[in-house]
Amino acid sequence: MNKKLGLVSFLKRPKINANGLLPIYLRITIGGVRTDISSERLIDAAKWNKQSQKRTGDSEEVRSINYSLKAMEMKVYKAYEEIGR
Image 1: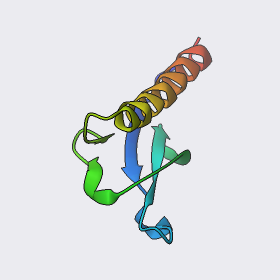
Image 2: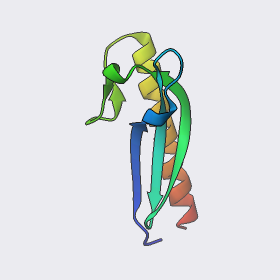
Image 3: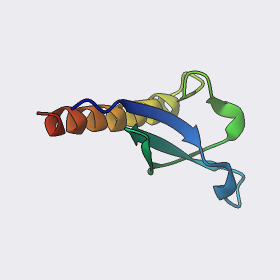
Image 4: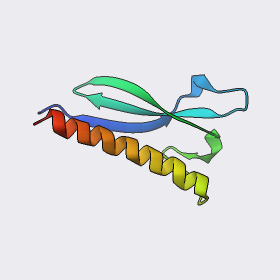
């Protein structure tokens, strides 16, 4: 497979909920075609590090959110590799 894979985690600002929390999405881009997938996690925008694409902090909740995002990325990479064979 010669199409480039890109992954980005981001907050979907138009989808803010009543508590002021934003959903975290994973954007998958392959060969210029992109798809957004919800992580089904919500966070306060002030606690999101846009540069590292992670939740900031050191609590158990932070580790859980960041682990979930990393697990989603790994599933995408694995599927991409399997399709490329």
